[in-house]
Image 1 (tube, rainbow, N blue to C red):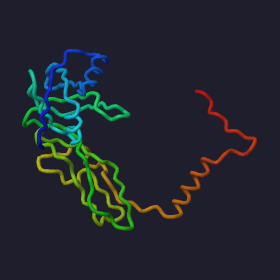
Image 2 (image 1 turned 180 degrees about the vertical axis):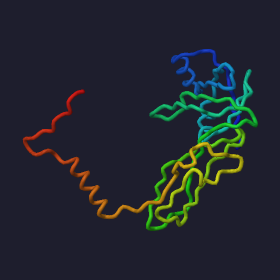
Image 3 (image 1 turned 120 degrees about the vertical axis):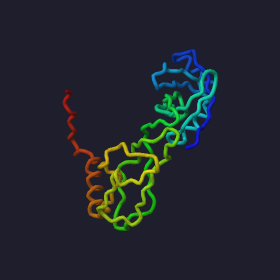
Image 4 (image 1 turned 135 degrees about the vertical axis):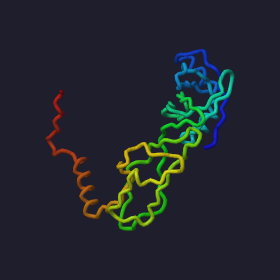
Length: 209
């Protein structure tokens, strides 16, 4: 995994007002913690942070006055409407140490034409060196038959990564496609739930607890 260098400035002002002022200047308040150090409050450039966070488990090299550290994003707050980053919690890491992270699980290929792929998990927990975190794990589902189940133990993890998740955790399975009769029943049930009550009758509200 490549490192992304981001300039970091020490932050000495706190509170909602100070945070809003930082964001208005297109910057992001952040906190660096871990390895028993006192948390360091930082200000980071907003655009660079937004770009960096597009990569899962991105390794960030913080460089600035009094700061020269490697970190992993562990908590990101975003504006619920506009999506920009409002705050970042960063975990301090060292070269060579191992960390536990969630990596994406993706599939390639198509299952048997009579089956339907049911992917229950889109990520899995693994342990890897902080500077060699895999970008994800791929599962080949080409031609898998109905009834096939892929568990965490079946994943072919990249070299250097070890499984942390329960080995029996179901990642995906191939199930029967719903029949026309089942789809019709589901549609009728949905229509019944939305049907109006007969004229002159009203639904009773549930009693307050």
